[in-house]
Length: 287
Image: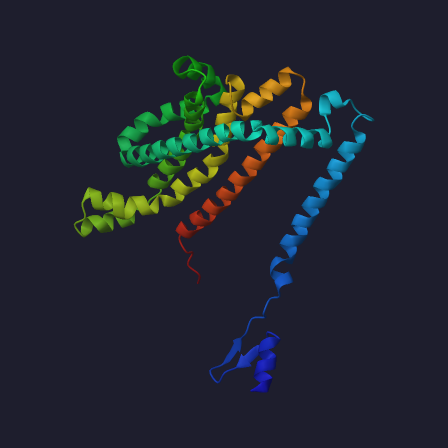
């Protein structure tokens, strides 16, 4: 028995009376997380080195009028945080991102599910959707300004238009890739169109839907900021334009830092959705 325990600790085969069983080694904390910790430490070190080089080179190797320097950017962020400017404009942009994503995702998922289920309608409308999808969304901004003004509505709808096509195309692809054998089986058992739609097509197409949501999240940010850059009186895009008009390079970089932080948070959300997508993937059969 003692030999079996020693063998188990060493990860060797243990004879349990029913044939040898391979007992896996117990992984230490470093074996589980050490690689990830090293990667993040190297990333942090790289950022620190680049910031130090930037700070030392500013004013010596290049003109700070065009590049600013990290200390000035940090000072600008501190000033904006103290007077509320940063929080006010950031909150406006975050609202535009969230509302635009929810509106575009809901419309895209419903349209993709319905139209892809109607084969003839999908074949007729598919080239029109592709043509609209191919239009650069920044080209739509002037038209949206004419229709909706320069308020929050315009940015929300521009973000929604950007998200819509990504979710629609992925949802439609998921619906069209549903196993027809499952549909035929439900029909043989007397299932109605409603049963087929909600018991077969919807669950089977969820991978496409969730993939579309995953891909579309960063584009909601892009759509909202594009709208603010074209025409706005609030939001982070407005801060960039205002700072650039005053040749305030530190202000431009400070706004970009905030946008980077928001993008990083969105990437975390993307990762969580990615884990959800993996749960819907079929388990591969192993011989």
